[in-house]
Image 1 (cartoon, rainbow, N blue to C red):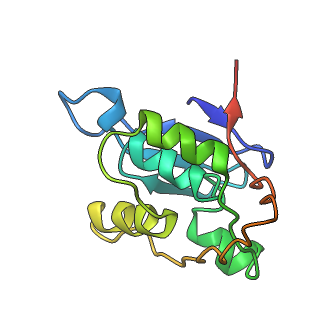
Image 2: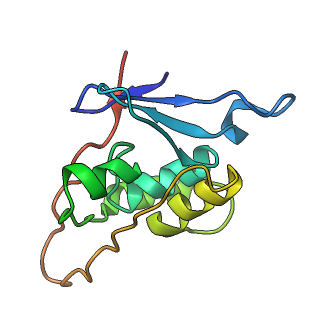
Length: 136
């Protein structure tokens, strides 16, 4: 486990790919209510997920279908800069990250994706809800 969100859930690497470095392992959300989901195929995808305004809880199917059906993600410019600096590979929209995670794991993770609204250029975006914080 490497992070915890405000709901009490944890983000963790799922060491399912033998011989691959930890950055290439799937990222999962282990919810405080027993829910669990693969939210990103690897660490770079997880960084793009956070940049897109999602925390690990918000990337789970149960969040948008059961808990917060009207929730809308708000991308974060600081996290976008972090993903641009540290995530190898192409930029990915949060919705694409969630869909890739579901496809990569045999579609075992049902997906309900909310697209971020267009941001007005003269207004600072709100901070994302549920973003991970270090457990240290």
